[in-house]
Structure formats: structure tokens, C-alpha cells
Length: 195
Image 1 (cartoon, rainbow, N blue to C red):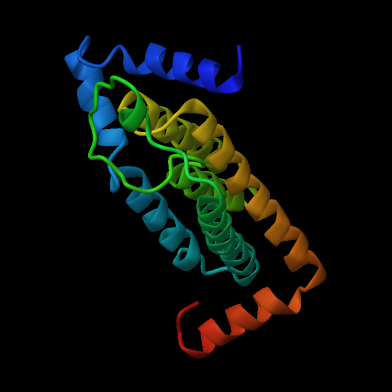
Image 2 (image 1 turned 180 degrees about the vertical axis):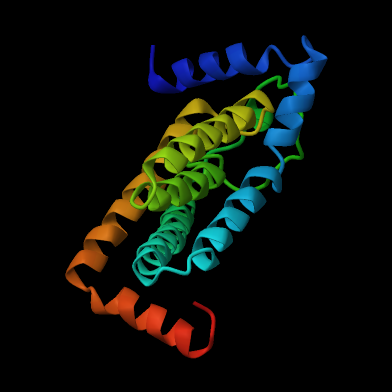
């Protein structure tokens, strides 16, 4: 059995429960939306950015937010390049699916929402591990909800997760060797009263 067959089998197993439990469909409908997790994570980044009076904590937290932001940019670029090279149809294009979400038209592989959510969580992991663990759990639920709702395969989620995490790790290494870049960004933001 090849990976595509396993992927479709796992997808069908998860998506096959749509309609069985109204409360679960409602919960997944909330989780899968383009708003709940992305907006919550964005507001969290904003609160981490502006929520500190202590200079040392402020610098540390704002650098963590920069890691998340640059990780998201990098992850989006990688996903876009991969989409130009390889297009994978969505599950609803190939299978009999119980759809709980609108039909996205971009490539199913890799999952861009998973890449973004895991990039943000990984950026926060470098400054607050307890908070990041909660964010990783929400990111996983966000990804699983997209499988349950019929818009991506399990390997799409795994690839998106890996891209998000590795993007932030790469940016963190880059920032380590090029310390002047986050310092320059933070100083310029402070000149305009944005940090």
C-alpha cells in the first residue's frame, strides 16, 4: 500500500464521521474557520508585542514575535513555491467527501494554514514554552479540523506543520548569526513608537 492510499484511507476514516455528532460538527465548523485560530494567534502576538514594561522582557518577547512573523513569511514562501512545482487536488475533488467548509481552490499539499499556525507557535516556543504548548495543541486541532471538514489530507497537515516549524528554526539560526537584523527592526519600530 502506497502513501497516497494510506493518506486517503486515514482521511476517509476521519471525514466519515461528519454528520454523526452535531456537537462535533459545530465545534469543527468553529475551529476550521479562517478566523478563530488565525485571529486569536494574531491578537496573542500583538499582546506579547505591546504587553511588557520591563525592557529586558520586552526585547525578548518582541524578538519572539519577530521570529513568528518572519517564520510565517518564510513558510508562506515555501508553500507558494511548492504549489508552483506540484499541485495536489483537494480531497473533495477526488473523493466522496462530507464537506463542512467552503471549497478552497489552491493546492491541498502542503497545508498553508498548518504552516502558519505552527510557525507562530514555534516562534512563541522560544520565549514561553507553556504558552507555546497550548498553541501547538490548538494548531494541531486546527489542522485536524481541516481533515475532518474535508479540505485537506493528513500528509498535507504533516507537511505544513514541518514547514512552519522548520521555517522558524531557520529564522532563529539566521537571527543568531545576524543579531543586528532584529535589533535594527526593533530600533526602527521604536523610532515610530511601534515597539
